[in-house]
Length: 387
Image 1 (cartoon, one colour):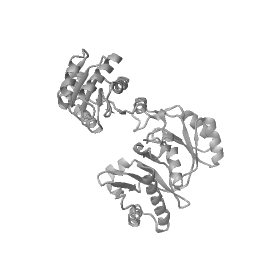
Image 2 (cartoon, one colour):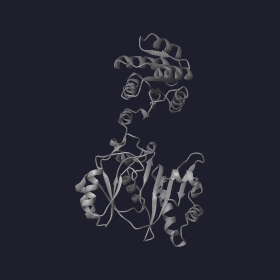
Image 3 (tube, rainbow, N blue to C red):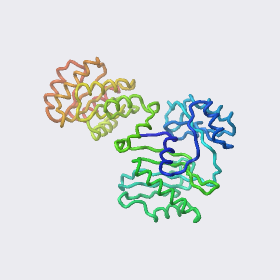
Image 4 (tube, one colour):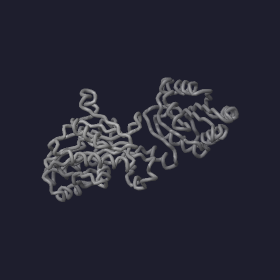
């Protein structure tokens, strides 16, 4: 679950992590007043969208007067911001964050993320802050430190000392740096974050470390522990089909391909997508209908798939375990008839009562193509959409 920069900084503030004063604004007038309220000689006007690389796309501008800040905001709000992370379609800017300036002595890169390989939390640090970490990793990998922390053992003082030495932190700043690292790690664990990226982390002329930017991804599987996660949701930033799917309990992620996938189980869904790609087509989505693929649920899934204009064919790949294949087949046929489905559909049903399900599909009179295996189904749907 992505959240905005201003929301990320609110979370950090809740954990006693200092950030620069800032005000969220929705129009030029609010921006004008924000400049006056902050009473800073320089402010940054920053587009609030779920994407990185905003500066290169024109989404971060410096203003030295209230009139200039207002003018920047009026041009920025309503613009379609295109960055390396938005794709060519870009993101519509609806609000900006007006943030006071600071005298920067040094910039660093710092992030925390889940280290699945080592079952820990990985710190990634570099003294090359303010630049794209991917470029640093590619051209100067020796300038990046990656350190995995075991959650059961926790963050230790020797971890922080190694970080400080790698970054060249002066001895007089070590206490300040150590306190920040401890607070960031605590916030990461407490808030069930999947990622916390600060680029840059700045050292100010007052010898204080401050996150100048903050990108946070929250694990929404942990939202039952954090009811306030719902307050961070900005549906304007979400894919509309994903919002619709979530509202009815379907796990859906839109992709750029032309094969609509309807599968039960996340693992099988991933395998299905990989196999479709292997046989020459491209999946248009990840869709896990779960273990209760009844007629209503399947119909809703069909409608979501059909809302994607790129979809040229649908591959249904269901393993009948908890739910029997014949029940799924009846649901598929009923749903297809209800919505007047005209796209070609390849169906592979395996598991309990698969033989009965095959007869239901065969006798449905619908535009269905039966498949006997995952590879067979992927081959058939790839041939259909590519022809």
